[in-house]
Image (cartoon, rainbow, N blue to C red; front, side, top):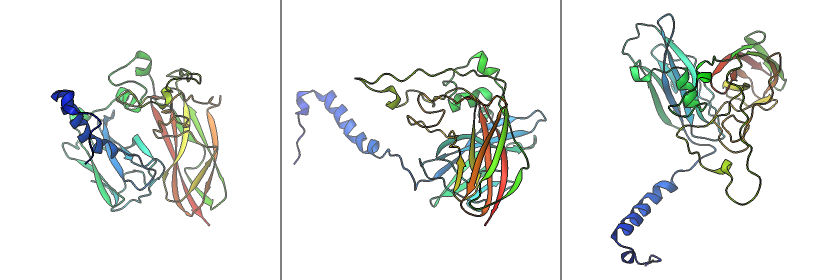
Length: 313
């Protein structure tokens, strides 16, 4: 029989109860793990917005429990939105980890108290996100800024409240042909109001004794995010391997130290071209139809544009 390294009764009953409670919680704590692959994706209803014409937008995102794997789920029984679907513009390629406010589905002003349901099956697990016009699900720009990390929870400031989302426009046709293995040049033009202004993060502490703050668990209930305009290309739809050069700033919440991500500690946006234009080279390893998204993000709000590439051998 294993013995405790000390006698509980010598410490008193209160301390013994605390020790016992911690022992019971230990198995729960050890189950909290992270995975590179093999885990499901969870669809998420982020809230709804009201449009000037009286219609509404249901806003969706998702949580991919993997750090590396990007599951591909084509439109159909395992990836559909109803009513009106199955295709309501949702992604079929899912970036790692938490991806908020990824797409919008417009519904008419007389939608009423009905529900819209996004059903998504990954790893054999069917998950659903339920969207409705409940008043407590109304979101505005300030809510998006808070959830994505530009603001702390429940905080605000006049500069960010005046921010307008950047506008991104892909140069050229929105539907293009390509061949496997042959790079395709894609350019995007970004315009922005210059708000918010870039605030360089505090530099990391010099090497020495003590803990590195960049390696500590987050102390906020929401993620933190660096401010500053940047552009990210990523695969929105399509199942094959796609190489984008140069390497792109991550559009998903990679909070790891050293990651090329606005959510990573001490990250700063690279200088943006004066003409607002950025060009990438994209190469496809497999034939098929792909949708690539160019997301311009000023650290607080984002704007998207997409191009469809049909790839043949």
